[in-house]
Length: 164
Image (cartoon, rainbow, N blue to C red; front, side, top):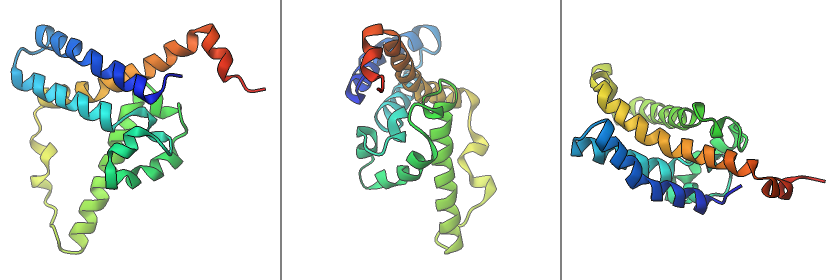
């Protein structure tokens, strides 16, 4: 399979193409392009499907917060659900949301921050904005999974990974 650097290179090289296609066919607003591009970069650099590996560049990019992905590596096996075209990004976003809820509940418990349901950000989230952000988050992960699958179709590459 391609190395993490190869995946990142492909994702970053294709970003201008995706942004141009987004601009031409979806939304010509510069704000939408910036949001899409920002979500795409965040996903490429920090939400890689390879976060299910114990040692990887995406986890190192999290810096001091890299430890939060340790349970994720225990829960998900490499190239399993985390590399699914549909569920891969959803598992990582759900995992981050769960961590955010746990952190918010802990802060609320210790009276550092009180939670009010009406003040939660998603109660007033615009569906168009959510779609733009989800497209930017999902596309690099779909590319990652497709590159892995295409690489496994090359006969001389498959032979290298067979176990005896």
